[in-house]
Image (tube, rainbow, N blue to C red):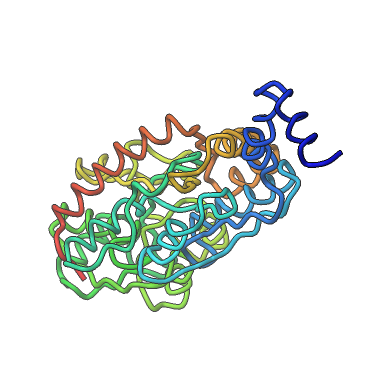
Length: 332
């Protein structure tokens, strides 16, 4: 058949058949996701809340999706800004995801507060699913002289600026929680920033710092081993895995409330079919027996929210945290 015959044959075909390959190619490409390894960025070193959330979920997603899901601990910049920014800049193709914390919304505001270039904006992300949501716990070495949070606060008032506490970096989740307490209790503490919650907890174990505000799941084993003591929590109610630990609100600090949640995000421009598949996979992953057992053993039960509810939650929580940052102001 020569070129003229080919053109005649093509002209005789219905328009819908001619259009089919063009229209179906992108849909087919999206439906094939994932066809290769998916990277889940955790913007902190191993050992913190985001890492605790990421690793069991990544293993479960790998089983569900049939492709490797690799956790990439990309710390730096203080509070997770380097990893968050890297995820924001990634191609919106579903192959680079972000498991991060509530500091996601705080860090751009901190950049603005100090007149620094903003590393990323929250609007660059689309919430996929909340995984964990725990109040932070005021944790000290078991060898510390403070048996109660009242002991800690009274000592801090006698020695302003002398009790060192560790954080995941300036304006990260651990930092905001401690400065919230300091502002409400009328005390001044010494801030020692680390690259993440894991290193901050190591600093607590080695005596570099004397206090850390962190999630229940990251300290449960150390408390059970007799190496750490929890004095109080930032929740509106007591944590089930630490029933004897009072809340700051019980003690009288009504405005001291802070939650360290972990959630999965994708880029805002992620194609809808990939987002739908990812949401379905995440719902299955966090409800798998292996993930549920792992989180419950750590004292941080699954706190799943699907994308629409998670987006509403992030918006409300971010507004509260940004207000807290503006109230605290510039702190080092």
